[in-house]
Length: 508
Image 1 (cartoon, helix red, strand yellow):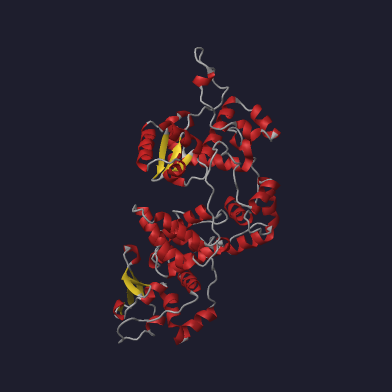
Image 2 (tube, rainbow, N blue to C red):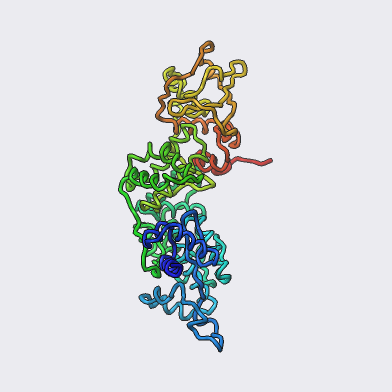
């Protein structure tokens, strides 16, 4: 039985306990005992709670080292984990390139291809763990995660040439800055198929106060840095590496759903009996924060704007940036499992997605908000930067009419008022006279029973711009808005921040 399971593990390469159990009609406890033995013998490695991987013995290149005199090739060398001839069989140019490469480059190419195949489809944490496990059994295959990503990106862009250690892409002088070009590439090299001019216009709109080179400069930079074939591929579908997983003889087909709610239901079903911390949290995220918003969508209808609008809604309801990142991360895992989401840019551990709505109120619109007593809710946001959830939980007892301040310590969620748990979101804000003079001084209870605001993002943008125009430091603005990290604030509202010094500026 042990040999049977060992052979099956080798065929599947990466597998779950359920996959083994579904193929072999054996008691679960017997399979678990054998898997435990194989882990102890370092035949397989445990990547996650229910995911395992077969770690093969790998040789860099069959011709690099001479065979020992007293041993046969069959007994001394395991078979290649990845056979270079599979990739080169239909590509004469790549075959010639490989044949003419130095031995150290041949070793490096096969090393990278082996690592790409063995880590195909894994998440960041799973990839890091897999690289460590491979290095333990095959010391020559040791590679750090950042180095791995650099070589993988180079291979995706330049093929085998990108894996040559001596290869350096040509450097082109251009008036376009590296930062501008990187952002332009993100806009243009996407399935949205913007023209060069439209992509250029989008870039200009994001940086109204910054000097942007001409359309032709960006067009020239594109043609110099990328081939026409690569540009076409990036604009038609997500960038994919050549299929390296040809060793496995049996792979489970990916389950895909058209409707997001069906994927949510299936994912919740898979977490039903699990009591680990991630599973418990993920169930709550889906049921309480993702299902109500995304449950009505089809996967194909979720766009970058959808994600940004969701972020804005959650921020306006008082959720912290850290919480929103966790919600979005759970959604990303579900989309990765049940649909193709490669065209979407998800938030990272360092920052949230930038604001979609970058408009601010005109001077006339600001004055109308101040003069119209029916827009007192909008004036609260415009004057203090308070969000909708905090405004809905505001009591008159939270207002200090002597000091003209308001204490923010509660928020309203689903008709319930709760205390804010994150200390950095508990803060005291000044109330400007334009708002203070309109607040009743002898009222009790909630300041507003119902909140009806449709232009929260625009009001908040305007609040930030008014503070910046008064030369208020961005760290003070960020803290007043309840951001934990200044980088989160800068990323989201970068379009409002000054991009260069005034022409008449004198430091002394």
